[in-house]
Length: 121
Image 1 (tube, helix red, strand yellow):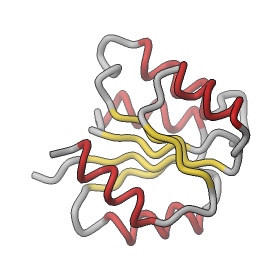
Image 2 (image 1 turned 180 degrees about the vertical axis):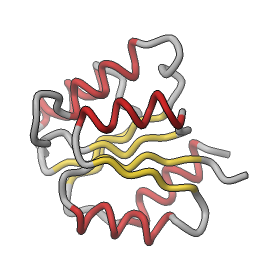
Image 3 (image 1 turned 120 degrees about the horizontal axis):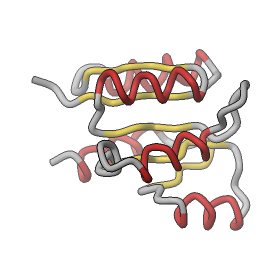
Image 4 (image 1 turned 135 degrees about the vertical axis):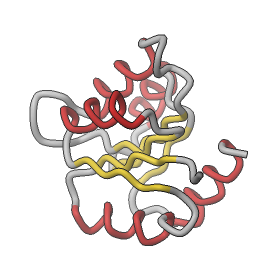
């Protein structure tokens, strides 16, 4: 059985790109906003989450990250931020909140593949 990856981004093109890149090796679940992301984490228990920070709605990526990493049932899930926010403060805050990796858009999908292969051995 393949490991499950949750891709959370409000940009359909990015969700599609990551799904095409990762779909042969992982079961892909996609969400377009924070609320859907939290529902998907609870329902599917993915091994990793690729998470945008800036999304529409009440719950942004940092709030999703905080929820995952402070919940005993989900804190083991690997979370990589995939975001256009490239300031050092953004990076530091995400890591302080528990992010396992931080990819700045535009990024190489190969970087994400390599990170997942390393984390999900």
